[in-house]
Amino acid sequence: MKFSNFLLVISLVVSLFACEKGEFKLVDFEKFEMEVPSDWEKIRLKGIDSYVGGVITSEGDTLIFDLGWFSQDVEERDIAFEMYESYLENWKPNEEGMIPNDSTFIRAYKPHHSYQYDSIDCFKVKFVTPLDTLGGFSGVFIDSLKVDGVDVTKFNFYGWGLSDRTEKEFIAALKTISFSNSYCK
Image (cartoon, rainbow, N blue to C red; front, side, top):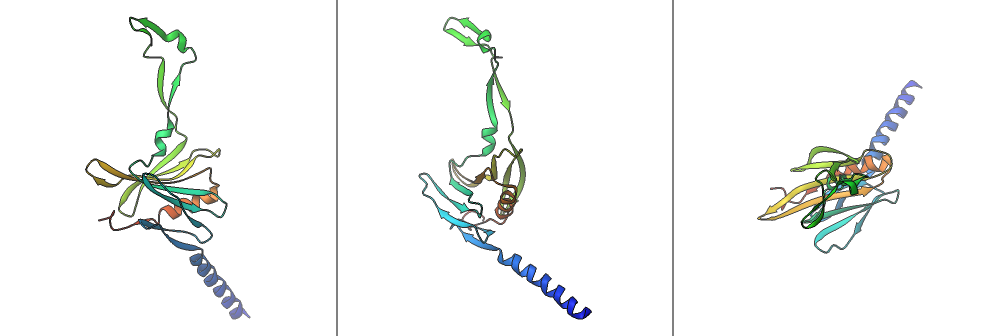
């Protein structure tokens, strides 16, 4: 009886590991590939000045990548300009009219995301996750995928307002990205 229980436990453990391996699939985006949960679906999008595409998650979230010269870094959105409430009091006259006093405008850094630096394939990357549960961007940014003179190809892959589960799956999937040989030499 003990031997049959032992065999049952062994077969359950083996089947668990077999199921985990089958829960992922390799998605080929031509310029890179990555492993995603098997119930995520690849989508094709049409870009104007860059190569774009993405996946739709099992929860219906759309995760979009942008590979091109104008791919944006989410950290730039965390920088905001603020005005004092009493900004009118800080304007001063000069020969050209009214101009703001230097203290009128404050450049404030108000982060809404957490940034962690790591590497994927042969590149240094910035992973982005929201700081609070109100949502925000989750994803990755590479600022120099390819440099050709003054042209710099960048890469981002982001989702917005993801659940904790989807965010964890997405970040894990991003860590499996492998770029084509034209990028990693």
